[in-house]
Length: 417
Image 1 (cartoon, rainbow, N blue to C red):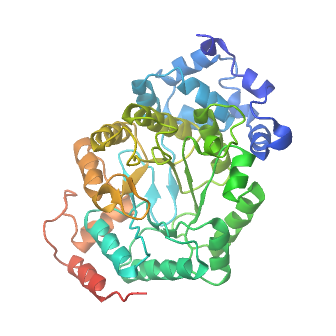
Image 2 (image 1 turned 120 degrees about the vertical axis):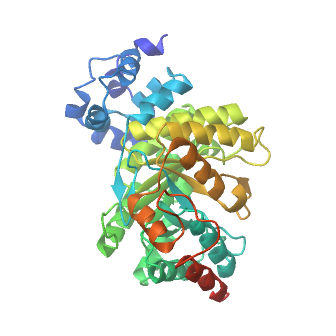
Image 3 (image 1 turned 180 degrees about the vertical axis):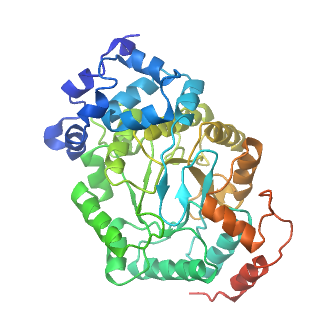
């Protein structure tokens, strides 16, 4: 009740994290769009909630106000919302981005194909990629978390993924989720970098622990833009976040982890990224104890990210020592599908054998697309049909036909490292 009566303007008058020693706080204040904020500047947090849930908050209105909302405002209003409120408000928002495929259109759900391997074995990665493609996954990105942050390994994996993309003319983007300094070195050596990836957090101190800064991110963004590898757009950054990262680095400034998480979104939107996702349950039960807390956090992160204008996805996941199971993930996945989530993960069997956590499978993505009538990105959807992976109704064809058999044959010919 006390929070509901706080004027939104007050968040512009008080520093939740002191700006003197936090460049994220300075960014939040310096990038605030006063004109966009003027549409809601007279409201309290409670009135803002009521407006977000009203018919007046159309897709167009929410888009026009996004640049005027600070992370602290978004986090505050989310605390006044039930789960259904977070679903309803997020569903109204569509933040569309483009590189080789169009991400975030209403009625669409994209999938990051995540073919991780504990030793970066190229045959194992190729098998997972082909498995995912044959299940309609990969329109958000084909993204590999490398087992080591080696420049040579990163460059090799980038080259092999790009070869496969070229061979089958797949309208998607590839990414090796190495540290951005490694990716920048790979770019300097001519590696085929589509997206620059980086984990980010909501305070300068937390980002210091990640080895990143705004200046470094600016440099990486400019380098990726200069490559001009996108065919239908220039959104070329990919960020991952997650509640608890600032707290685990003792860089939270006594601020709750959900507000710190939302502050990371202010940093992300500086770069107009193609993809952002909260790896919501990955950090462990020390931060989100059980399935109920993971569900709540996933809906909060998704809503807050979309409200700030980001193409928000969620890695619906948990660690093996959390009080959660795959039934909890089914529930959150379904809620996020209803809420208009931009994309989710596609992991073979939902079990990431390199990162050792549980996520969502290719089959889980097919489930939520079917029950909610959602479709892949339009360019990728056309490719699936052309390859003979899906039929005219979008259903996966049982068995392989047409060009899909070539995809399988390609997998059998991939050499080891």
